[in-house]
Image 1 (cartoon, rainbow, N blue to C red):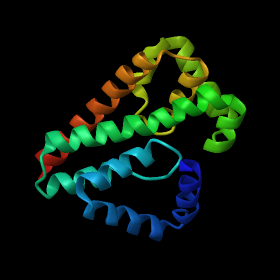
Image 2: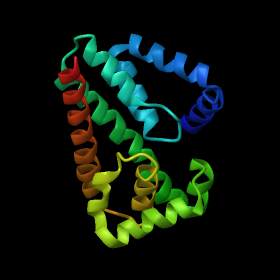
Image 3: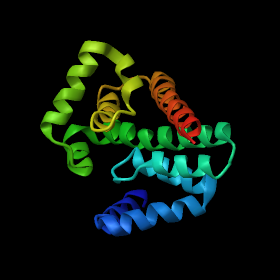
Length: 168
């Protein structure tokens, strides 16, 4: 059911104007909108939770609460990728996430070179989603996955929040 909704949203959001309007409406939902954007941004949808977080920070909401919600939402979205790799395997994961062979090869090489610590970089655009899928395929222990992915995403949101609040 979740995948049907996600695929429908993906189709709907392929128009950049629609995507921007959708992201703008997420700001109106405050913490819930941030959770949704962070969750979807960590899966297959082209969303930016950073934009929503920045807007909500500037609106005066609690930075600690916003960072916590964004981190939990983004880690939950990464769990979808992990589960996809764990249960569906490489072939189906590549098809659903529309990732190239090269992206998966690079993620696997990073995993072999840096081990599970590479999951601290799951927040990095382009390489993050494949890393979380590869973690599922390689059956990384779920506890380590949650700790390392959570740490990386938490630090990213802390740095982003600091930058947003110091610029203004």
